[in-house]
Length: 210
Image (cartoon, rainbow, N blue to C red):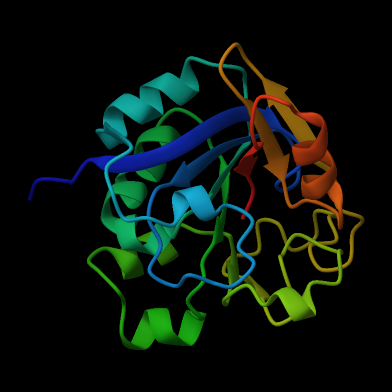
């Protein structure tokens, strides 16, 4: 069976702001949930952005700075579960990474009525799943999740005793700058996005968060 191409909004490598260790990050384009207050609204439209085969993206990431983990976000990763599962397989053939994934769907919904093909396969490869829609009124500014209704699921034990506080840690974020854009990587502390948007005269920051 042919694996579909990935529709990618952005990627990053060697970040420490979206999980323990040095991580590569893949943000997919497209989300059906339209959570009010989403911090990456430009990645909600389900439209082509950067179309790339999983094998090609895996090679690109592995050719960059070394990383020991992969974080999947968006957009909504579960809409591209089949291709992301292939991406994880390709990377793990070369590098024994841990995998963190953010999704606006609950784990129960994903198991009962998956939104597309490959969801069960991707879930089987994920170590930490952060699930549930973003609710701005429940954003307490803490942890590796956008709001307190979201649940951190340890689907394996690989990161259970790593010492990283997924729910209550102080949030950190990084600015990755190139000649075309400034990308904020991480779940932003309260007020950070508004501050950045106000000081960057050339336009809003590209959000690289969950």
